[in-house]
Amino acid sequence: MKKKIIRITTVSGSLRDLLQGQLKFMSNYFDMVAISSSGGSGWNLDKYGESEGVKTIPIEMTRKITPIKDIIAVYKLYKVLRKEKPDVVHTHTPKAGTLGMLAAKLAGVPYRLHTIAGLPLLVATGKKRILLNFVEKVTYACASKIYPNSNGLKQIILDQKFTTEDKLKVIANGSSNGINVSDFNPKDYSDTFKENLKSELGIKPNDFVFLFVGRLVADKGINELIGAFDELCKSNIKNIKLLLVGSYEEELDPLSKNTLEIINTNQSIISSGWVNDVRPYYAVSNVLTFPSYREGFPNVVMQAGAMGLPCIVTDINGCNEIIIEGENGAIIPVKNKETLRLKMLEFSKEELTFHNNDCRDLIVSRYSREFVWNALLEEYNNLLGD
Image (cartoon, rainbow, N blue to C red; front, side, top):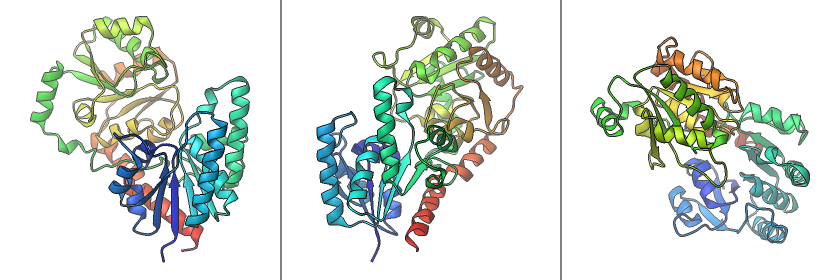
């Protein structure tokens, strides 16, 4: 009989976004079960189960601090785990990690694994930070093994003294699920397709295109990016464009008024808004500019690399592991508009040259989904003695 592994996230959308295809792959070797909140009518746990071909069990969990609902969720998880008798419980996302690890510990599950893809608590302050620190330590104490999805995140966990180094391990080279390099392949887009899309966007054939993909918010470094690009335009650097692919979050993390004014008035800045498929925009661009303040392990940078683009990224967790200076991009200090401007200038003048195939090959060899999945499979087998 196959040994049983239960994967848990707080909401069903996280299963789709963080673990697409992974449970289907693992079901070739294990009896896989997914637990999460049921979700709404647009996307729900049932649909995830159908797409992955695995059993699902709905247990409602919240992302917020809700003590009574959390206790109820722990009790329900405990009951399910006692009934299912899994060999492994593997959790993702902060709340599912806390509730799932506690329930698994109480239920006597032999192997209790938790993947860390980021630490939102690091931006909390005061009593909330004290509470979140305590909860994080409880999560790690209940777990058998903790998997940070990057080496930088592992070091942060050690610096915060959340757990000891013997409990920590980075799977493969990082990332929770890798990237589908077959889906992100520049060969899928013909010259004619790219010419037509450029024409639609108002990009000339000889324009050098900088690209940003993600939420248009301050924490992503958009204020610095817009400021740096605008100064390049004012210095009479011709034939450059900045393509912004993403939506604003005015209530949560608004951009400065000056930044918004530049976006609306600079004719060389093109904003597409939110799109269903980002791949065509990578295909018509030359460089990804990603000056974010903080990340877990950014998919955008892996996607760009898989599409053959070099990247300008900030020296932050995740980004500084995906990008190797001088090989598939450049790494600059956080919140440094002038350094960003100079680096963009170097790229646009072809003072820095990167081979598209080399950029893609680095991602394929280090972060393809099959590579990450097989590394996790090996970890499961080592734990279970198979």
